[in-house]
Length: 113
Image (tube, rainbow, N blue to C red; front, side):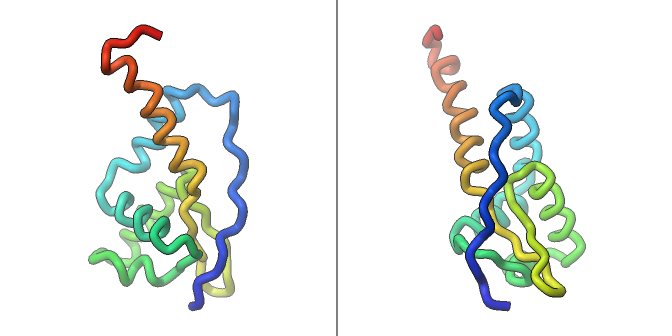
C-alpha cells in the first residue's frame, strides 16, 4: 500500500479539564509499544496500514489493540482505505501532551503561579 497524506485532525476541545485530558493521554501512551507506534507514524508523516505490524515484533491482534487505544485517545487517526485502515499520528494532540506537561514544570521547580 502506498503511503499518502494524513487527513486533517479534528479540533481539540478548549473546554476540556487539563488534568483529565493529560491523564487520558498519558494513560494511552503508557505502553512502550504505543510509544513505538507514535514514533513510527511521526517519523513517516504519512498514512500507513500494514507497515506498522511489520515494524513491531508483535502479533497483528496486539498491534490492533494498541492502535485502538491510541485512536480512542485521539493520538492517532484511522481512515478506511479499501481493505486497510490508514493511520496517522495526530501531531497537534501530541504537541498538546507537551503543553500539558510544560504547565507542570514551574510547579516542579517550586515557582509560584
